[in-house]
Amino acid sequence: MIILAFESSCDETSVAVAEIENGVYKIRSNIVASQITMHTLYGGVVPEIASRAHTEAISKLTYEALSEANVIPDDIDFVAVTSNPGLIGALLVGVGYAKAWAYANNKPLVAVNHIKGHTAAAYYSHEGLEAPFFALVASGGHTSMIDVKSPTEYVTVGRTRDDAAGEAFDKVARLLGIGYPGGAIMDKLAYEGNEKAIKLPCPALADSIDFSFSGLKTAVINYVNSEKQRGNEISHADIAASFSAAVVKAIITNLEKAHNIYGYKTLVIAGGVAANSHIRKAAAEFAENHGIRLCIPERSLCGDNAAMIAAQGYHEYLAGNIADSSLNAFSYQVT
Ligand code: KG4
Ligand code: ZN
Image 1 (cartoon, rainbow, N blue to C red):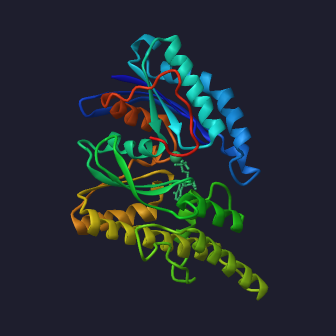
Image 2 (spheres, rainbow, N blue to C red):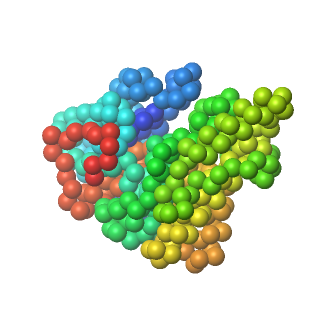
Image 3 (tube, protein in one colour):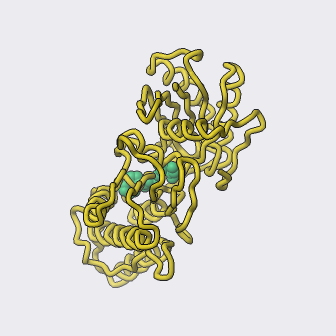
């Protein structure tokens, strides 16, 4: 099947064409227009700017995606679009455009949950990956531990109770003034520091498989403020290393607890934060020690992109989850 997919839930406008058939997942095109430069000035995503930028970009990107994939609208079997969760104005641009495109070209329309989409990115690089599996989705907006019972049935069994993992990376990077978004910058910087230099709390909560990243972020803020008051120099690299080590420890601790409960044999780690090299390394060791198949999407598919929406759209389509013209967008999770 040839799928045209749209993603516009946050600050990336993306349009992709994927060819998926009998367990073989191929990306024909996956164009991502990042708005990072527009939001950098504000140190975070400005929803109004994001929506306007999606509106300006989406039509042109659709032509580009079709042309790079070497297909015409007639070749498309169905259209998939992220409908939830995300920034409401941003989502509405993608949903509105996808609805119009599907109607004008007389194609079925499929709505995709963004978090399911993140995990579905793993299908492209891990041949034979099939539900059931366990998933950790860690991004700028979400940190969810999910018992994936079937390709479309996701049960969230753990979550962050406050900030998302990526949000914590971004907020610490902003505090240090080292750039936005902070995840990738902190990832690199951590190699230059000592992870034992600063004592920080572990964001894995003791009584569940939930996380709390806000306490970790506050501990870093307190550390920076008290060192400044004492007139001490602070090492950005030591902070990045200690912070990363705390995040890695929390993730592995909760994956271990979840393994004891759910006994999963396959683990998917996805979302923007899954691009983190320290997390990838620790997860690979954890998986090897427990005889678990680890499936992390390749780095370029960890962040928001429409190819991942096409992959999940494929499963929704097979399950008969076809949307109609009343499809709406939701900032919270509905599917
Ligand atoms: O999945 P994504 O592109 O967007 C959301 O759905 O939120 O995730 C973006 C998040 C940002 O917070 C960014 O800092 C983080 O992913 N991120 C990373 C890395 N690359 C991106 N976090 C840690 N290490 C990285 N290498
Ligand atoms: Zn995302």
